[in-house]
Length: 214
Ligand code: B16
Ligand code: MG
Image (tube, rainbow, N blue to C red; front, side, top):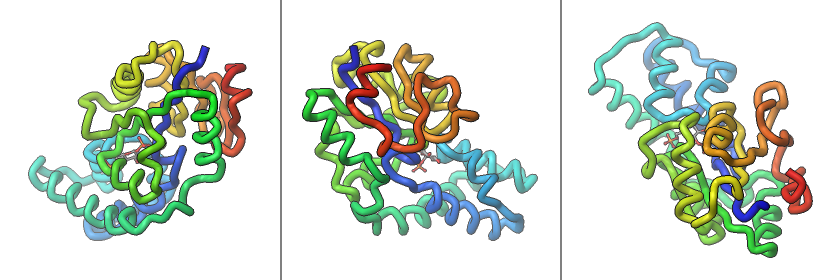
């Protein structure tokens, strides 16, 4: 029986991948190499420092930790210049409606995101108050596919993992949900997220009835 839903943020509730892309691309250009949209796919759901490592690997560049931290901070400042201007109309189709439907059925709601900017984004989208628990990149030590972020969400909601469903757009996130003994709805392509219990193209395709049938 499903008692709680745990949502990933980027790629599920909002599409911030394009802002990440612009900021990482600018950094790559500064370092003298090209960074494509296809490369950007590899960064979805991945932490900021791991994303930088992947970017540097693409550019064939090695550097010291201190310099890496400086670059990651600079990228984040550029990224924040976009997200601090976000508006509620950037919420992906169906997300608000589905969250409201869950609330009507007394289903608890948590956020489980790798992003350290999650609070800023939720505030800008005016979604913060809908969440009973918010676990973001500032509260976890292990990145997805480790289930820590989702298990912490379930714990804060005081709901057993087997009564939780995770909504995720990244393969590592689907793995994390299943490793945490939770059900998972993948948002995106069945080729990539095939391990999930159900794959849909967006929350506009989701409703309470489908949740009950997972
Ligand atoms: P930040 P999610 C993830 O969010 C993004 O998908 C990923 O591209 C990003 O690198 C990561 O957050 C860290 O974000 O730099 O804001 O801390 O999909 O787990 O909600
Ligand atoms: Mg995501």
